[in-house]
Length: 117
Image (cartoon, rainbow, N blue to C red; front, side, top):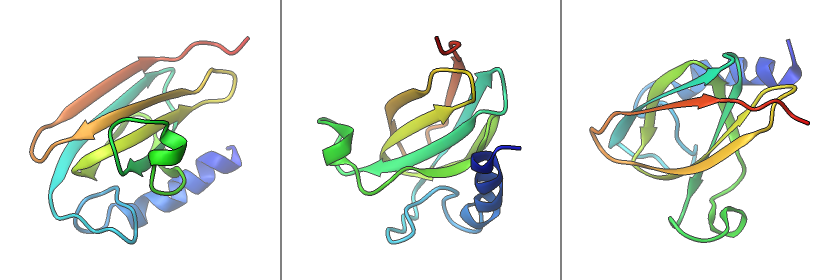
């Protein structure tokens, strides 16, 4: 198991205790959105980073660094707002996108990862 996957698996129980499953430690949000992320192939590491604004360069508009939440397939809750999502798997190109989580609106994402050149 890679070190990143091991860290992701170690962090998962702490992130899923109470309230929203994925949240920035210094910013607690009571409103949550259900999210599911699957990949082909499975077992990719999933990272989240909360954004302060929906537009702009994620490097300047994000609140902090990406943090690992687990591996795919992933099902959990995140706080409402804007999030950067990153998926990494050895031998495949990483995937990044910005999503908006809305209270009570479940979201499902499926990605077919492309082999790295």
